[in-house]
Length: 139
Image 1 (cartoon, helix red, strand yellow):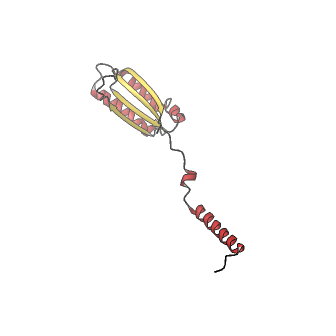
Image 2 (tube, rainbow, N blue to C red):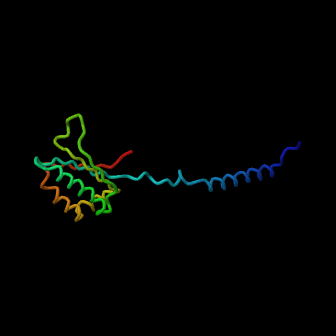
Image 3 (tube, rainbow, N blue to C red):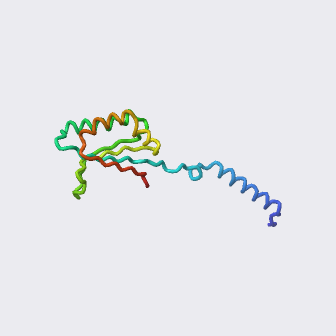
């Protein structure tokens, strides 16, 4: 058996390098072009209703708040619920609402939006206290 010539070794290496380059170019670009995870801005709103506010009035407010999602396109999601904490630290707040946005610009569009202003007129007279807390979701 004779030793391969330098030329044949070079040709074999060149062929392997070409094959590797072609194979690499055909691989999915997932790792190289992955977009960063989408961020969400959470706009948390807690309500303490005035004494005497009826369950029907609270339901009207909750429905009107949820309906904003269909009126303001910048709203990505809406969630709501009542306090169920066993810690007793709700400070009188009984109802929580979370409105999600893709950007602070979207949130800033929502705040002066006519549909939001109309909602504020509805809910304002029924509230004893309100707390608003915005944050970026971190995963």
